[in-house]
Amino acid sequence: MKIILHIDEILKLLLAQEDTDFDKKITKDDSGSKKFILIDEKTKQNFAIEGTYFLSNLLQELILAQESNQDFIETEKIFELPANRISRMIKDYFWNGLTRTLDESGLQKLLIDSKSKTEKSIIYVPFTDDFALNYYQKLASKFNLKVVQLPKEITPQYVSSINDEGGILVLGLQNKDGKISGLPFVVPGGRFNEMYGWDSYFENIGLLIDGKLDLAKSMVDNFCYQITHYGKILNANRSYYLTRTQPPFFSSMIREVFEAMPNKDFDWLQKTLSIAIKEYETVWMETGKRLTENGLNRYFAQGIGLPPETEAGHYDDILKPFAEAEKMSISEYEKLYYERKIENLKLDNYFVHDRSVRESGHDTSYRLEGICADLNVVELNVMLYKYETDFAEMISNYFDDSFEYNSKIYTQKYWIEKSENRKIIINKFLWNEEESCFCDYNFKTQKQNIFLSATSFFPLWAKIATQEQADKMVTNSLPKLIFSGGIAGCSKKALKNIDSSQMQRQWDYPFGWPPHQIIIWQGLINYGYDNLAQELIYKWLFMITKNACDYNGTIPEKYDVVACSHNVFAEYGNQGTHFEYITREGFGWMNASFQLGMRLLSDDLKVELNRLTLPSHL
Image 1: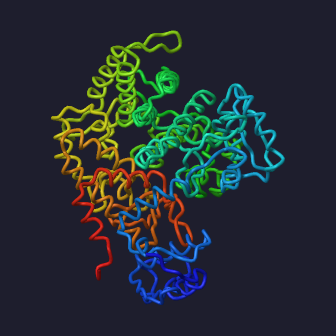
Image 2 (image 1 turned 90 degrees about the horizontal axis):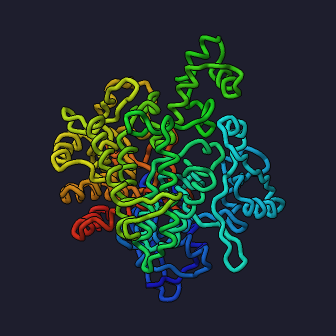
Image 3 (image 1 turned 135 degrees about the horizontal axis):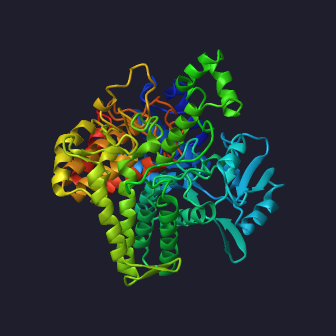
């Protein structure tokens, strides 16, 4: 039913009555009457809106009506069931709010950014893309833009020299009927206003569920551009990420997009598969870099000095003893070290590990602190196993078991042998029978790093574990990670040697993240633990839905799964929580986890989810 209203007037009255903390939201923390009467201007019929959830829905619908110059709102959207509303908002609004293009129509959204450090915005173009260089040079004056062509060889020294500029790295352009436009991509949200590495895989899961195939395909095409022109899938398309890659999910992205195509584009698959093989061989399998002597892989990000993207004070604990030894303040020592006016080999070594942590996506966690580049981590080797099995299946299924790349013929047998060999080595070095789990392996000390993490369960996602191993993990290890809101980043016991005065790391207990939930749900389903998967999906969706009901539709980056709260203050805070009136985008992989959860959750549990998150008086 449509209610005819004076939208601006009602909006002012509603905020004056219910937004008692003046944050332009209606949440459970406001102390208003929690009841508002609407009168239809046409029928004079009264409608009572009661409770935080419905009042915040009213606020959101009034804002949307105001922006559309409408004089009505629809009652069914005010009284929409909570989980259904979140899912609809993600599909209809949030993905659009997160979509960007690096072209004339979309540059403004990307250039006005908190990470831009110079008066004139800078955009970097690969040495190998003259077409893009010409395009952006033509736009330079319009956007007060400095266009820089990157050198042919990008060294850590060069990247260090541009650290203070914070420029954007270009992505793919397309020319359709003489009109040049950027290949669209999805950003995570909040202050993360770039195309990020592993975020993009999980975002793609949500995009495909919501029928946004073209956008999901464009995400893959942008990764192809990055590998072709930057030599790797970037941590993100920002200048200081040029020496870092990210967790490799590219083969999964390609398969899932191709399988969603109603009309299979085999030329596209051939191109993307070739580029994925190139990434596998040049980024991950070159000896002495990310491939170690035992045949397993590691994260190994190059770079010099402090990573420039961290917030002030992040490294105070690390720098303090060195500053005190030189009788300097921490800030003074940090400045001189950052400018390379002080040499410190111990710090240089620490920051190799620190950059590698950031390349891993788990920035930061005590699991990886100070040792990341020395670890064959479970999840990375599982993801590369998935590459190998994906390559085998795609070549067998779609290319008649013969795929040519770089003058070499690849067959299913070639990749199966690769994957089987990796599985043997994973079991040799990473499986721990006593712990009933897979553990990271320190190839320098030749010992396992015993630290129960959500990443320990990635082998179930890629089907590496035997059924016996999976049973032991689910029985003995997984319960230590399960809390009221789902899976925590690590067990509480894993942090037993961490002093309470030390900074909380956001990828550790008690925080929970969408990638871990998604991977573990699928892993459990792979091994016949459907009921447990349903339980974990429900816990996660209940936490998201309840917080959204209580906090004006908030869909954030991460949660405290022990407290079931989005009020997370570790390290970088919580993105996706800062908005006025209505969230425009949620947060990329949180959106995706919700949509996947809703797809997987049984109908009876969806009914229960909506029933239990509605205001108690209804």
